[in-house]
Length: 367
Image (cartoon, rainbow, N blue to C red; front, top):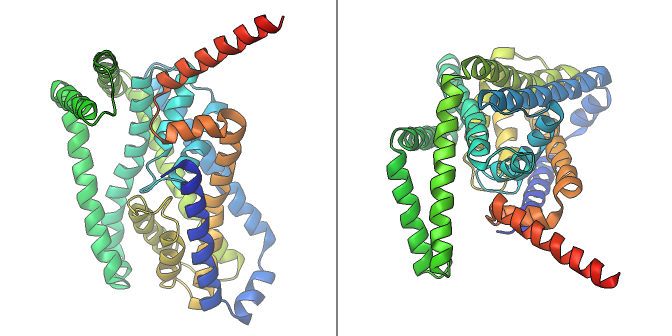
């Protein structure tokens, strides 16, 4: 799926789900509650979102220091928005990493380090959620009782996370086996004519050896010599999630709905945990409709749908919009499309060099 198609599908699914939710749930009481909402609390929710961006940016900076690199805070903000954009246009929210690795590479961070930084950042969030969710389900078992589908989905997610952690441990403990698997994949690509020449195969082997060595070295470096920065990144990850989970209670308070903070936190933790593994771009469609159904356990149905939409606007849509702005202004749509299709940062850098030399030769001829 191309980048443009992914973004269009995200928008269509989101608008379609939101339209259905509004048609099925909104009534006169809903409109009255929204019109009389506390505008200062809505601004407060926006401020909490800004603080969550800052925590996420700080996490990137801390992880880069753990890998003995320096990423300025402003770049951390850019990486945060790029992650939201990349996640919005790919299934299972998996597309943020390539954009982040490319930007880090352009700033002088080796690809192996960039992969390690972005992977650790994602796994910190997943690890925290995988610890919080069982606790939340133990304290609030009614969350799963509200939806048998959600119950089955949670067990599926735990299985996927278990497999993911096994794979990561395998890459760290058995780097030689990982290289062999990578080279087997390259040879299969050669047989399928995706890699055309033997020289290209050798180049891919050399790139694979170099970057996997760099990835393993920096993954271990972050946990050995960068323990203090790792602890800071973990603390910022926890704070980031708490801030995101605080948006819904503020929105509920703004429209005069009673709430239990622990119950809203538990519900959102389970829901966010599941959203990481929904196959639509950015979990679009499911996030809106599933949010409405799940929030229906916290508030009346005539408010649950619209609150799910507003919650999604604050926690996701704003960040995705900022990511679109960054992609257009900083990367350009062509570069972003190539990254989305799997072009490596090194290949893109070589292409830029070729374009630059070509432009220079044309200019010299014109002179």
